[in-house]
Length: 122
Image (cartoon, rainbow, N blue to C red):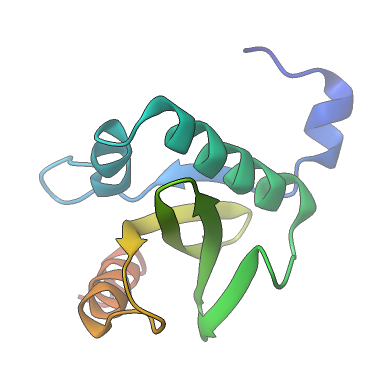
């Protein structure tokens, strides 16, 4: 899809997938297993953040310094995509279907590790 110049000017962040040292893109791989309707909802929510950054609740929640989550409501439950922002890049670090009220510590720790790798801290 080609964006018009007007779209380019209103674009706040470029979205990229976190890439592991083995060239895997975990969030992209996770998305592949979701139903088309779920992918579309998550994609629209990410696009809203991309064009409207900075945003807050109810779509975006800051988890801690350097980490935010996109909060998507799906017909089958709740999805979260944890991301970091580096310069003008929205880096999608981890995605999961939320099953409890609080963000699971394992998911948060995984996003923290990926952010540290991205920043060259690990």
